View 1: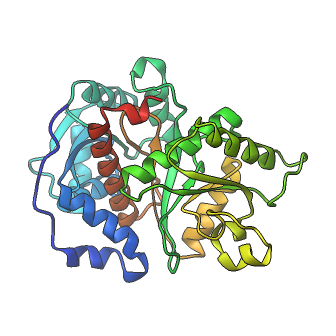
View 2: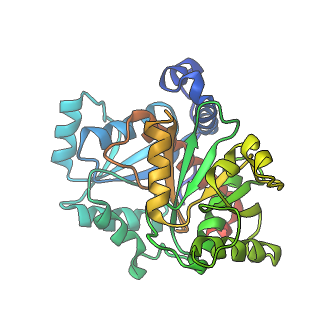
Amino acid sequence: MSPIQNKTPLPADSLSTAFPDSHALMRALVAKAATLGPVPYAIVWPCSTHALGGAVEAARHGIIVPVLVGDRQEIEKVALEGGYDIAGLRIEQAATPAEAVRRAVALVHEGEVKGLTKGSLHTDTFMAGVIKQESGLRTRRRMSHVFCINVPDYPDLLLVSDAAINIAPDLITKRDIVQNAIDLHHALGLGEPRVALLSAVETINIKIQGTLDAAALCKMADRHEITGGVLDGPLAMDVAVSQDSARIKNVASPVAGRAQILVAPDLESGNILVKSLAFLGKAATSGIVMGAKVPVLLTSRADDATARLASAAIGALYARYLSTQGDSASQH
């Protein structure tokens, strides 16, 4: 693959403007990625002001080197309308979104880019091109999405999974969801994580499948089928993140009240949790798809510029991690 480039990032005060003190943990993560230098990324169908603007902003901060894959005329039109300077940026011509996905995947195999970012095309079109066997991007591990969240007043960044891809994961899929999130925690330089397997209660209830799965996942970790993190569950949300609640409910564990990874029992609960933290808890959010041979950024049309910038930073840091691991982190 092409080398990861070095480039002097913008001054730190520019990040202070994008990320207030309440989101200082996310700001530090973005600053780390900027300091390490830009990583080449394919921006698939950047044919909206949000998609193109996010790529230009990440490039301006020295986080990525965007390769714009889509219709040249449309991209140049959006750049003109948005006032974005794309002079010097590489554009790979693709007439349709599906063709753009195919060309971006080819750029990965040609060693030209180290990751993929969804632009303004439909998620189904984008992910279909990534997950199909012919793409050559699949590994033995199931793909899953991980949100990285900076909640004001919480002492650690929170990783939440899976809230975007696996609707009703079975136990084996949950194993991969947990391992993917643990790997990302290490890739971001955050150390061995405390993983809370969420449910409605802290006890085993045969009528609540999530409690059974949580118990099984903990035993899988004991048997080293899941590695790199400390697991506990089932845990209710309050016990996972509040030491007061853990103490009142008499739940003693290295995870209770101090979780760094929250694993939802299904997509619906995970998605509601993330959006509650973002819109009611005023949290900063970003995210990435794990389990492919390269990082995949699945940005939303509702993501603002800071969310896109943070996602780019996470993708860049994970790409660097894979390069140091010989891609083994995504092969298990």
